Image 1 (tube, rainbow, N blue to C red):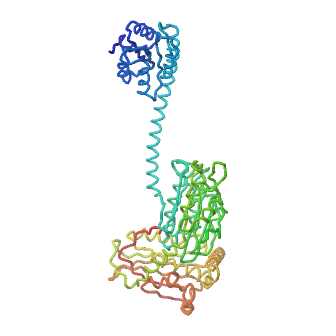
Image 2: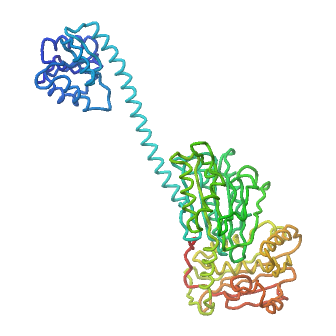
Image 3: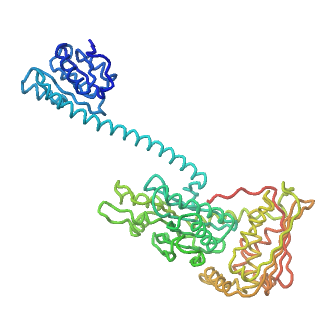
Length: 591
């Protein structure tokens, strides 16, 4: 039986009370006191009625007779508590029985107070005053929790949108076949670390590991612009010095002055036999041999990018000879600083232990397992990022690519391109620009925009780059390629090239590139001329055993990729003609 003991609650009633009492007279007395204290009472004559009413009434306090028919007060209290376990509602037992055991049983059932009959009005009002105060606090907390929940849901929606946008602007790279494997474990919802890899048109692999200052979304936004810049420049074929300079310029232009980014850049050129590393603010890059020992390391010898102006930054990388029996290990400082429960850092020793205990093919997983064991379930305080580059897999990839290029130029099937029409581009580069500007990627970008249908494929880029390097290194710098045959020869050659180029005061290189339409299809004509002594073609042909005669580099590569090659003026001028393929290859993935 359900009975309302009063009219609808007035405007002054801020609270709701549920009176569960089988005696109507006693129920009226309780309801009168409740109304005088600002409570709107609702009466239930037994426990079953109270259970039915409770979800609809949502009372702020319950006065419950202990001894009732149908269902006693103890059972009613237990079931009322189970209806809404997330909200605290005081339950006060009202009974004429003063038995101590009954009182203890009532409290065990969830009673918050015990009021003997007849109820003392002053004591009940004091209880109601306390209940009103706690109800106000609970409502305030409920409102705050609701606001926090709404804020959290809105924040999560914004995070999802931000993550989606960032993934579109900067696609996450995690697996690149056998050559490169990467892992990123964010300390928060967004990672301020990125690893990216791009294959340049000359076949070299460029790798970037960047660690933005701070944590979370702010740090992730720090690395976003340099990731985009790296992708663009590496795909065009710029070398590490140009990459360092441009990334530094991008950070100083696009980010607040107090933001900087620790950066590691690696270039692996298995054709030229050289590994280049530039480390600004990150942990050491380690070269790991087949036994798991570190046989070379590149500590941070430069400031993080964004700290100083580009003209004050040393953009020159360090060189070592390429080896196919090693792996390169890169990481962010979050790995080295990962703390165990005792406060000890994972550090470089943890990395080397992981390498010694596992074969090369399992080292990637071994480091992940080792750092997880070190943290022992604790959360890392900073983003953790690792990258492992397998130089043996890189050499295998280059070998496969070289074999695929053995199709003679004359055997290519050609057809007119969609962007038909002749054009010609002439360029004169003096000594000052030669020492400061990476010319070929700029030239390739210009030509690609001039002929957007794809007249410049990877092989055309290689021909142009080899002719330019030939004019610069042999014509103006007068370098001897036989230097590469010595121990560590490729590194010595690169350093000597760098030294002579820095001292170059005179000299000019002319580049003339033209697209011509023929009955057999479109062709590319390239002429490169230097003001120096030129390239000694005769000596080159006589020295058939020299390392630089390999078919995958230098003039040998040029001759294999072109229909015709003509040497003029003692080798200071070379003109080639190359048939353009019918379809341009898709951009190559890093594997």
